[in-house]
Length: 407
Image (cartoon, rainbow, N blue to C red; front, side):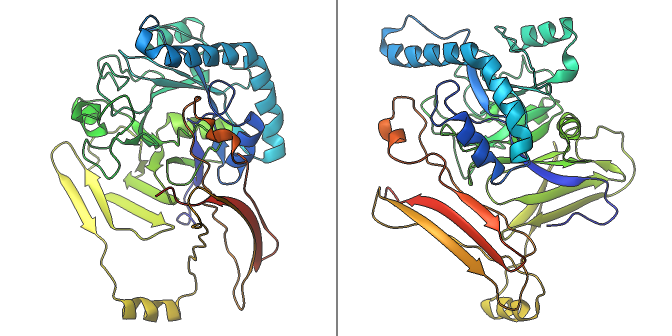
C-alpha cells in the first residue's frame, strides 16, 4: 500500500498493549521483541504493575490475587533490566520499542502507561487523576502517554470511567483488543472475559457523546509474547518518519486508526486538517481515503447526530475474473493450518513468482493463545515460532508453526 502522492506522512503500524513474562504472562521478552519485528514498526511490551483496589482478602479469588501480586513484584524487581534490554534490542531488530506498564482498577478501569524515554520511570498512583498530577508535578508530561484499556466492560468491573477520564496525557482510547470491540455496545466481537459483558456506557460512541475528544487505537493484549498477533488488534498512525520522536508526535496528535486484522490505511481530512485535529467548521467537504489488504465491505462516518454509510459494490465472479485478467497488481493470501485437533505442525515454505514481481510482503502470523498464568499449555509449543525473509524480487521464504483447530 502507498499513501497519496505529495502526502507528508507515512503509515506505520504498532501494538502498544501486550504482555510476556516480564510480569505474569507467557514467553520471554526476547521472543516478544522478535515476534513484534515480524509485522510492526513500533511496539510497547506491557508489564502488569499494580492494582490499587484489588480485593486482597476475598478467599474465593486468592489464586488470582497471588499470581497478580507475584507478577507485580517481578516487574518491579526487573524494571531496570527490562529498560536495558529493549534499549539494546531496538537497533538490532529495527523496531521502535517504547517502555510500558499497566495499572488495573475496578473503579477507574485499567490504564496503560507508555513512555517516550528509554529510561522511563515507573510511576504508580491509585487513580488516573493522581497519576497525571504526579507526572505534571515531576515535569515529565512530555514523556508519558496514558490511555484506557478494554473500555467496554461495566464501570466498576474494570471498564472505563468517563468521569475520571481527562484529556491531559490521554489523547487516545483503545477500542479493540483480544477482549472485544468497543466502538459500540453491539459488535461482531462482544466482550466475553470473566470481567463480565460490555455495556453501552463503555463504548467509544458513548464517550464521544459526552463531549470527550480522543483518537482511537487497537492492540492485541496478547499474553504469550506475540505483539501484533494477527486478528486481535493493531494501531495505524500517520507519522513524519519512523523515528521514535515522530511516532510519539503522531500518537499524541491522534493521527491514528484502529484495526482488528488486515492492515489498512485510513485518511480522513477536512481541508488540510487531518484526523485528530480539532478545528472550527472550515466550510469545506470532508475527504475519506481507505486502502486495505483485504476486501472492504463498507465505509462508515459517525457523527453525534447521524451515521453515514457507503457500501462497497459486490462484484460477480465473472466480473472479478475479468478485472483480475487485466490487473497490474494483486494481493495473494497464503494461509496454512488445519490438521488434527490440538496437534502442532511445523511449516517451512518457499514461494516464487513466475512472470511477476513481489512489491510487498505483509506477514499475518498468529501467536499461541494462552492468557492465564495458571494455564499449563504454555509449555507445549514454542512461543517464537515464525520467521520470514524476502530473498529477492520474485521469492520469499518463511517458517511457522500451526495448531489444529480446537473445534
